[in-house]
Image 1: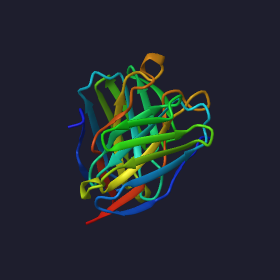
Image 2 (image 1 turned 90 degrees about the vertical axis):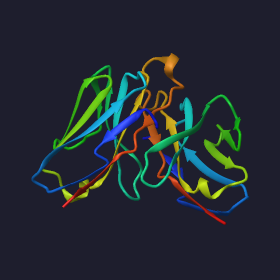
Image 3 (image 1 turned 60 degrees about the vertical axis):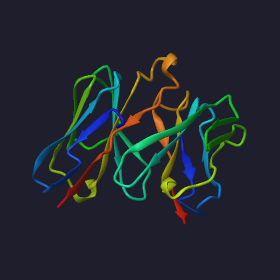
Length: 118
Length: 114
């Protein structure tokens, strides 16, 4: 139990579907992250939220739309995805990385959602 | 930009020591981390080291940091079959990167043979 819960664990969807991935953290953190993990590629940071505000969008296509209603919840809304978007999507949380006092605070990861696009 | 490199595979026998190596490019890195990923799971933090240290030991794990060469290693003593997993090296960007964001290597797949 990492304190970061992702649902669903597996998702199969067609290219025209709309679905959402959910992440919830019970660690009292105030920063949350979405990563994409594809085979044979480094972990790719997609989005960063600090205190519910988006602080980083790593040139992610608009078919991925994040939402952070509060510091404990993070969503990734998906629509009109492509086959190359099939991957493991990982959520992580940490204390606010912008404050030096939290410099050594690591990111804690959920178990991910395995997404397959047909 | 920042880059983190790791060899992709390592195979050892049960009971031997494993050494997983990592190199990075950002000389202003503040913290360096080792994460473990088992099949079907997310990344689990194993240990981390502050950039002004050169060694950290935690039970079977020993982290060595050569800041001059920007080289990090993870040694696992008495490797067990349960240690089979993918190990990721990550650096926290300093002034050279987005503050607080982690840059990950591609991961080293450790296979432990009985």
